[in-house]
Length: 202
Image (tube, rainbow, N blue to C red; front, side, top):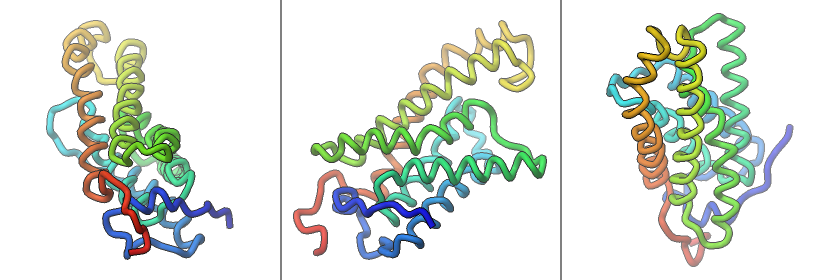
């Protein structure tokens, strides 16, 4: 089975290091499962907050948990693959999935985290990496949702495309990016510290 190398620098900021998985196969399965859980939550849970873009919290929470319990290099991308695989199963079963914006954020968050965590090796906090990845993934999700509203109103949010976009756009352009920042920050703060421990094995 394909496994990823351990990320000692990432683990040095895990809030609960005693709970991390050392076995590579177990870590791989957990990361894939975190992606699957993110898909299930995004597709089936409706928080009904009335804030465009808020569903990203359903992606960032299991993603942060997965990386904290199995701190592996490239773990974010593996979580994204788990999410994609679960979406494929949903499609085969004809099960309802989330809208285009939420799906975009779901699939992009993990790979963007891996890119952001590359800079974390140069001293940037994991929390900052989550802030950046949450912001960027939801910003792209907003763009996809806006395009769907304009060109595919039946999928992106019904009604007349132009009118729906005019009333939705001014609020959503702020809430999508704001929700990405908040969700990324909260999820990372639950599972990670702002600074590395001087002795990760302590």
